[in-house]
Length: 110
Image 1 (cartoon, rainbow, N blue to C red):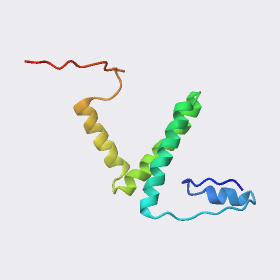
Image 2 (cartoon, one colour):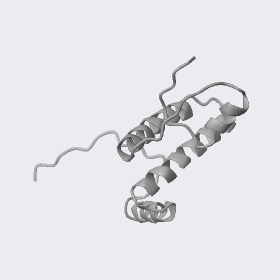
Image 3 (cartoon, helix red, strand yellow):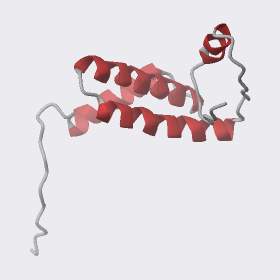
Image 4 (spheres, rainbow, N blue to C red):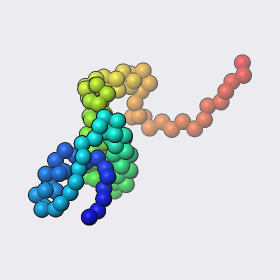
C-alpha cells in the first residue's frame, strides 16, 4: 500500500472508497493543519511551475487559490479581506503588470 502522508482535499476519502481500496486518514490538529497546508502550497506551486500548457497552469492556479482560501480562513480572514489587502498593496506599490525586473540599486553617499 503506497504511503502519502499529505493533506488532501475533503472528498478524496470518498473518491478512494468508491474504488474499493483500503485507506487510512486522520484529522489534523491546528498546528499540523497549518504545517501541511504550507507544505501543500509548495507542492502546488511546484506543479504550477512544471505546467506545460495553459490548461495545466489554470488547474494548478486553482489548487493554489484553494489553499489560499484555507490559509486565510485558518488565520481568521475571509478571501474578501485578503483581496482588500492585496488591492491596498497594489495601490501603494503596484502590481506585476509592467513586468519590471530590478537589477541593482546603487547606494548614494551624499
